[in-house]
Image 1 (cartoon, rainbow, N blue to C red):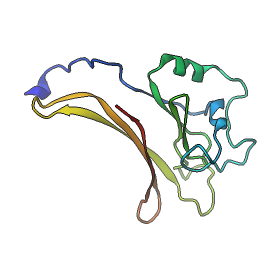
Image 2 (cartoon, helix red, strand yellow):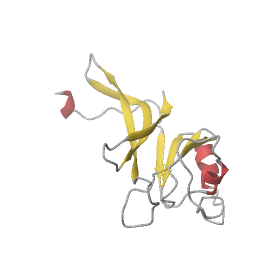
Image 3 (cartoon, rainbow, N blue to C red):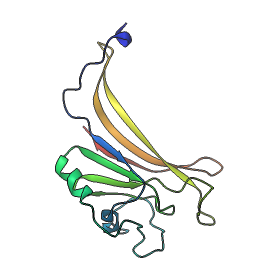
Image 4 (cartoon, one colour):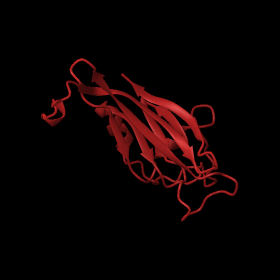
Length: 152
């Protein structure tokens, strides 16, 4: 009958996940030494962000609860890197309606948020971990670049 009762409020702030389309300028701070995945976009520094820095990244850092940001737009980038304790991740190019790269399997980023569970009271607790990986559109539907983005 626990599943019919009202949920209890979480005792601490939940780790924030942010999703939007155009990458922030801060994505350009990564190079092959400090991210997992690939950066294949040829334009400029490989990041198609706004020319104006909105200050949104600084705002997220000051908020202190954002653990990961997920963006799209650049179909040939699929990397995740950590900057100021926030993971900046690309979704990867997964659609066949837009540009891609010959021989490079389309891919989609999967995000898994695991909750704590009290096995004695059969109740759910706060967020325990946030993990991610990419699933390729190849014959075995390969799973690549598994990462733990945040863990309690």
